[in-house]
Length: 174
Image 1 (tube, rainbow, N blue to C red):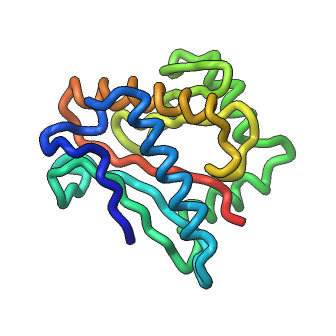
Image 2: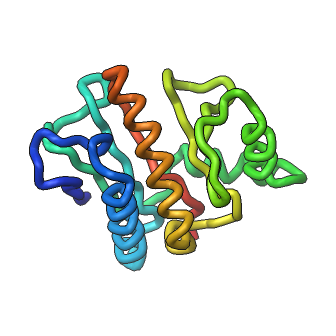
């Protein structure tokens, strides 16, 4: 289990950082997933952030957590199993549908961000690459920059309404 400190400034939060610094955080996450994934008995490297009292924050200083796990998390396994039950790619179908919906938050050449239909949580947002990518390692600079820009927009809105949040990076395990 590792902690990535996002900023040296104690009172700054991820939402306060420019998109370029958020992209640098994504670069670090990408590196940690790659390196920890090489370890014996590691099946998945989870990246997540809890921010705010209602999200389970334990440290006030802004940080993201990385956990090297000996098994694939149940939610990720459920997503894999569900995806295999469709004739067409469910992610492509979701992107095609949501990119045209009123739930769309942000879109670029590389990504689309939207509030999913029947969200499980208040203010839930998903960011998908438009091109199939199985892992963080496959993301190029343009995609990482666009994801960082989308995160900046979403996090700034959450900060404006002063709400707690969690974020997770989901990818396909080997």
